[in-house]
Image (cartoon, rainbow, N blue to C red):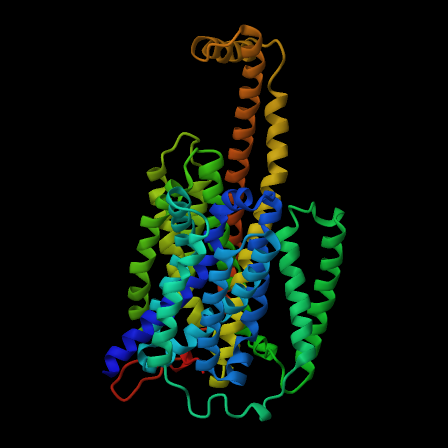
Length: 525
C-alpha cells in the first residue's frame, strides 16, 4: 500500500507541475482565435500571457513562506483548487478584462504547483532515491512548455479556444482528490501560525519589483520600450522595488524570502546556470514555432507535432539520469555536457535552409531535448549542495523563480533582437534590389506572368500584385535571417557560461548503512 501511495504521489505532483507549465505556452497558439472571438487586438489579448506570468513569478519565491504558514498540504490543495476554478472561469470569459483577471488568479494558483510539487515528491522518496524523484519531476519541466504548443495547436485546429482552459478541470479535480487522500501532512504542519512572522513590507516590495520587472520584459517590445510612459514607470518601480526588497530581506531576522542562501557560492552560480537554462528552454520554444509558422509555413498543429517526438527523448532521459546520479555520479559533468549539446542545437538551427520540412528539425530538436534533460535535473540537485536542510525549500524556490525569469528575459530579448535584426536584414536585402537590373526585372516578370496565366487578372493588376509578392518574399527572408541570428545568440549564452562551472562544487559523497551514496542534500522540507 505504501508503494502504491508513493506512485500516486508521483503521478499527482508531476501532473500538477506539467499542467502549470503547459499553461505558460498553450495560450500562445490561440491568440488569434481569442482576439477574434473577444473582438480585441492581438496586442490586447497578449495580456492573458503577461498577467499569468506576472502572478506566477511573484508567487514562486513566496511558496516556502506560504507553505510554512498555511501548512504545505493545505496550501498545495488550495492552490490546485484556485488554479482549476480559475481555468474554468477563463474558459467562460466573454470580455478582455474578465479573462485577464482570471488568468492572473490562475497564475497565483499555478505558482505554487512547481516548488511545492517538487518538495512533496522528494519527501515521498528515501534520501538515496531522491535523484530518481528529481528525474521524474524533471520530465514535467521539459515536457510542459513543449506540450503546450502541440496541445494548443490541436485544440485550435479541431475545437475552439475555451477548451485550452477547460481541459485543466478534470486533471485538477483528480489531482486535488489524490492529493487530499494520499499526501500526508508533516508533523505540526500549519499549526504554529502565531509564531510565524509575516513580512508584509518584504512581500509588498517583492510584488512591486518582480511584477513590474515581468511587465517590462513581457510588454516592452509591444509598447516600444522606454518611449512608452508605462514601461518607464514600471522600470523605475522594478529597480526601486527590487533594491528595497533585497535590503529589507537581508536586514530582518525572519524574511519572507530567505535571500541569505544566495551567500552560498554554489547556489549563487547555480542560479546563473539555471537562468541560462530557462532562457534557452523558453526562448527556443518561442522562437522555433514562430520561425516554423511565419517563415516555413507550418500550421500551429504541425509545429507542435514536430516538437513532440524529440522532446519525448527528454522524458526517457530524465529517469535514466536520475538513477545514474543516485549511484553517486556528480551533477557537474551532466551540466557541462547538457550546455554543450544545447549550444550545438542552437548552432545547427542557425544554419537551416528556408525550404526544410518539419521532420528535418528532428535531429537538432533531439539534441535540444537531450541537452536540456542533462541540465535541468542536475541543476535542481546542484541548487541545494552546501545548504542546510532548513534552507533547501528557499534554495529550490529561488531556483525556480530564476528559471522563470530567465524564460521571460529570453523571450523579451528574442522579440527585440528579431525586430532589430529584421530591419537590418530588410534594409540590406532591399539595397540589393537595383531598379532596372536584369535579375530584378526577370523576377518581377516571372511573377507577373504566373499571375496572368493562373489568376486570370489583367497585366496592370498583375504588375502591382507582383511587387506585393516580391515585398512579402523580402519580408520572409528578412525574418528568416533574423530568427537564425537569434539561435546564434542562444548558442553564445550557453557557451559563455560554461567556464563558470569551476565555481560549482560537488557534494562530498557519504554512504548509508547499505553502502549506497547518500543524497540528503536533495531533501526539500
